[in-house]
Length: 377
Image (cartoon, rainbow, N blue to C red; front, side, top):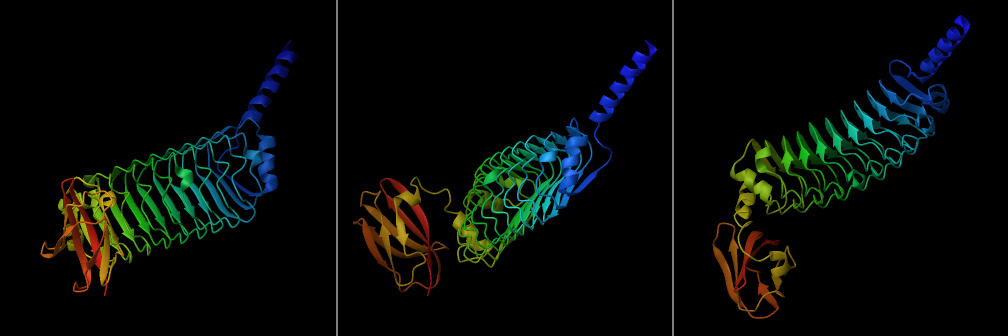
């Protein structure tokens, strides 16, 4: 009986030992190490430490039992790893997730179940990475989110479930990134928000769900960005600093959040070196005077082309009963042109106007519509 008891105790101790996770942090630098973990610790599902994957790892199938990692999860300098296949059951990481300088990584597929990250999410210098598809279940990042220096990244569509980021949100130095579409559910950033040095970014559309920024808002050196539409719903009182500069085609900055901040700033203001209409703080403040005016949607009420114009422009007014009055004024309110509009298409001579921004106002029985006109010489 004593021998049987000892045998049972020994078997149980071996089972418990077999089920334990190895102590401390782990570094996997070869495929054999990854495969051995799955064999040696098949019941290690909740790993308390941190894991670093680097070097010549081809796939992560040996880690398929992991459901949580208590420390950091690092993917660093991998030369063969193209995605995260094998981590399908991973739902949470307590520390940072760093995906940095992986030379053949083209997607993040495999992290599809990951819903929370306690620390930072760094996605930096992965030059083959095309998208962040694979993070579709991620809802919150406890500290910050940094996406940078990834030459092939074209979109952030894989972040469509993300609602909260703490400390910081930044996307910079991604020369192929053309859209922020996919971030529509992001509601709150508890720190600064920086969108900087993205050469192909034409629009901020994708931030429509964002209502709160707990720090500075910086939009800098996005050379083909033309409008800040998409930031309309941010509570201006949550912003504590504003920098909009060196966006050479940016002419439309008068979204509601920016206008409200300029009316009652909670911190510093730097607006410079953008296109006419957003070149200075004064220009944006003038344009903001028109933001809430009128009952008509200007985009549907009338269109102006070409805009910018040089010697003449065409006004197209498909939505109006043609009893409208057109006025073109300087930004200080001085009226320069006034005439009745009786046709759907009307050509207006602007050859006598100097280069700069003007306000086009169209008033009819349906209401008032306002648009900006930029004149180039």
